[in-house]
Image (tube, rainbow over all chains, first blue to last red; front, side, top):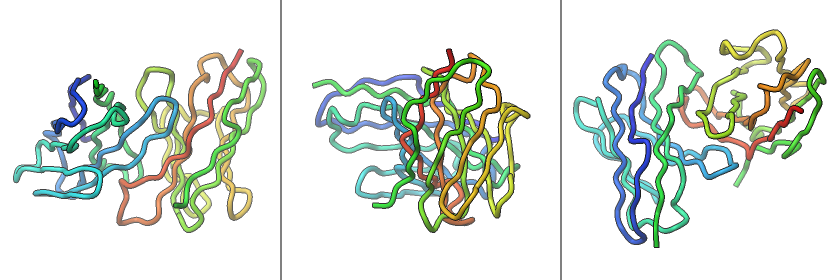
Length: 111
Length: 115
């Protein structure tokens, strides 16, 4: 089973770029890397997904090195509303359907 | 934007009672899930459902739990005899197709409080 390791928490300030790195040493060849965001008392929300190199959308960028053993979620110019828990997940090759969730990174943005 | 809808938002029940949590997945989605999250803890997978049958379930999903898709729109989770430790947020999620297997859309959740 692929597992991920992320920092438990991070602080930053409004207007800064925030990078959250996730380690996934046992990622399988066919696994994708997916990031979700969760606000208190809400369901997780999909942010971005990638397989290799770099992916960018209107919310974030995802950087994946060639060995794919880690990934970095980059949030440009964060605001107070980006305060949330961010989860990094990789596909479980033993299960077509199950997402395995870690503890996530609690990001706190300060004014 | 289409969304997953869950009702009720908060359910209070007595220990030993049956509860049914309801979900309306996004209309063209084919894969459905239930997760739970105990306050302050990780999101835990319960069960996945595809083509009118359970495709996978976790150890948490014991005989006290069942899922059903009674019609073309609803997806329900039933807990037959609730225990105190069933108190948690329960999230329903749905997914469009086999290719984007890690992109799931979650509802806002039902907070279950067992007294």
